[in-house]
Image 1 (tube, rainbow, N blue to C red):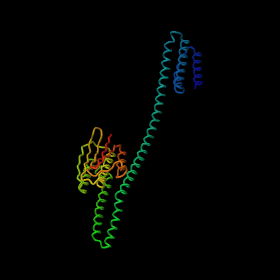
Image 2 (cartoon, rainbow, N blue to C red; image 1 turned 90 degrees about the vertical axis):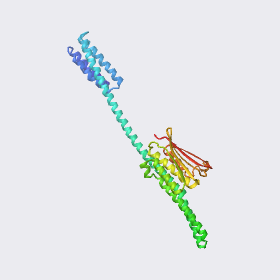
Image 3 (cartoon, rainbow, N blue to C red; image 1 turned 60 degrees about the vertical axis):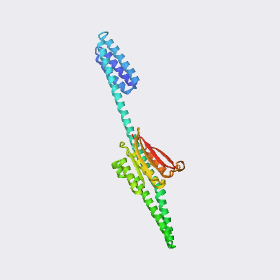
Image 4 (spheres, rainbow, N blue to C red; image 1 turned 30 degrees about the vertical axis):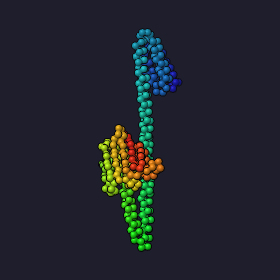
Length: 324
């Protein structure tokens, strides 16, 4: 590039010397200055612009002497600087376009990666939910059904032996266990996102669920649900699932007479609280049982803070979450 510019400069200067009476050869430095800005690094191109400027000044003042050569000198210098500036602007515009295209490609690639990650996260969440439901089915329904089988065998033996009263007692136990299993199964079914949660929102879904529990189990339910803003679908599903999990535990283990459920706004947080008056349990000794793992996993999925407090007067489950 330097050799090319040097040769072109020599040709222009030669023309100026051969045709001493003509001034227009200096115009050729203008496109040459533009080429220098395109083919050379900026600092080196500026050096060549300086060389072209010196050639114009010396040539014009040599041809037309001072001060007659000054107007043409200023004219050609202005033209050279304009072409060089315009070329620099075009070069920077082109560089900016290339940079913009590169950033757009990176953004599109990042967007595709985020979509992939979102799909993987959804699959993982689905898998965790399936595992949790499988554990619940194993811990509650499957074990109860196994117990029903043993009770039925005992009743059959009593009938065979003619022990009618014992058989009747075993059948009553089977009836009670079957009713308990039915309640647990209904709770597990309702833990799947019901249509009412999607159509009416969390508050209406909780009200319907609690009214259903009260009517079917005889448990006295106190509901305190404040009007809160529309929460994201993930948070609503998570809070609803934790409430169901807590109700399931109360029906199975707490031997409670009443339960109080509240949903309220405290500052920037939404707080769900489920409190019963049952027998309570040792929180430290039951770190993974009674569905606690399921509630913890749900809270982690939507960024909630789960607190469990229990004594011999009952249990309180509190979930705090900031939405948006």
